[in-house]
Image (tube, rainbow, N blue to C red; front, side):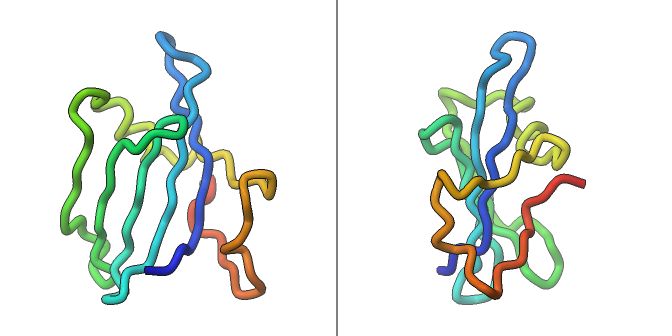
Amino acid sequence: MKLLDRTMVNLGSKDNPDLLGHISLFELNNNNLYYLYFIEARYFGCKEVDSKTNKTIKEERISDEYHYNLDLFFNDRDRYLGWDEMFGEEFMGEDYIPRLTQN
């Protein structure tokens, strides 16, 4: 598994305006993409996507925190804030290609 990219995500809403999360994107040994989702610093869920068809293979969310708006917010690229070096940039080598970016 290789870390490809990360981004902070604005998960704020009317009820919780300051909520942040992040996505870590990995490439699996079979070349599929694996997304890990976090709310603040806590695990929220994951998704494996076929690298050829871009179709979701499997997905899971923790039930005690789940609300469908969170899925919408995580998938809304306009909410992506990027990844600042203050959070760690160990994956940002010379061959780094940003993948989790705003539209």
